[in-house]
Image: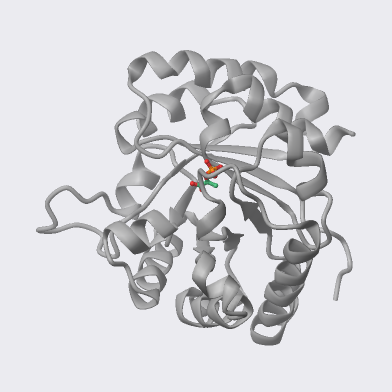
Length: 254
Ligand code: PEP
């Protein structure tokens, strides 16, 4: 078993933000991903579905990857308003976020749904970023590890033993709130997630990238990304500002 750390990934989740004018922001991210930065970290931007193709075309020949924010579990069919993993791959995406807490809440996605989406992503040649995380009530009740453990068990596809899958730990109460867990809480949770993945997927679990997400900003990136078993970040609000997103990634240059 290798003891090498996975290469870090800093991923931006633009959520339902951005029109064609935001191409300028993406261009600034592409420009800012210089040789020094790309030697340390992988960068990914997940724009709304309407911008995936435009961004993927702009990113050709650069190290910056483009991803989707969600996908349907089916490849095609009568699913009005949905986008399949096959479609995302077709327009140049290489990752897709699945099971974000906003999808789990707003669209009542279950672990089973998330797992089916992750499987569809892998089948389409995409790397799924499987999101897990507890609510404030669950943490306060001392159930954070149990909740995240159950989400992992139910949402991670068996294919993760042989295909690339990324896990993002995002405490629901830290998303978009400016609140973050303590370094000790992040370390405890990431250590727990790592052990669960190793127990289930063996060496693949050791090498899987574990991202932390929830109010990551330039001012706290160094501290959060420096925690053991944190292999990068899933960034919401701060990824909409090129300089902030790049500043977070530059934490790996220090
Ligand atoms: C997210 O939505 O994945 C997220 C982490 O958001 P924010 O960085 O804004 O908390």
